[in-house]
Length: 219
Image 1 (cartoon, rainbow, N blue to C red):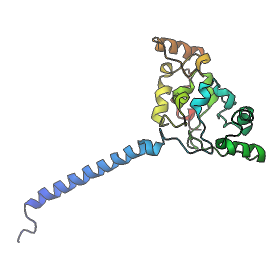
Image 2: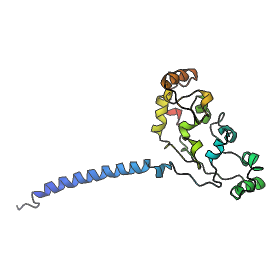
Image 3: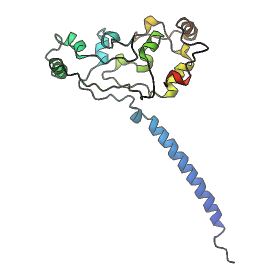
Image 4: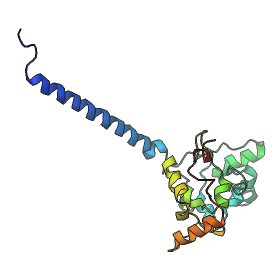
């Protein structure tokens, strides 16, 4: 019986299979890179807001984070400031600025401004602001240098892997509670020594409460 395929067909078949495998792996790697890209994770890209609020301007004027985010020390959520908080100052400062017209309209009508949340976690992730703050985690650790952002953007990708970097070794990130809201705080040279001391002092974790247990963030 005559040979149906030429001897080179085996080589072509092997090369095709190898090429298909390489193409599949490259495609999966490409999708992973796209998923982790700043475009998808929305990092370093300010979101459009009803008013171009500058954190940099307000922080440099000496306004503390807690003046606007009033519940951050006692609640799971860092509240979005109400129009009343804005008007505490802007009823007299820049009160006729066209840029602040949406704020004045909100104040007059009683309709809240619809701010777009920058740090928005999925529903299956539980995050409590007050716990992190009261355990000595600074605002900058998660939100980045907000005091340098004319328009606030997401600094960190918010991956689970990124969260676990801190949960596995909190002593690398923890700081004294009185420095949590200090945007200019610099880690001391003895950070690990200080961190280990603070982890014990603030009861960050123990044998029965490991920060890497699934239920800590997924409830």
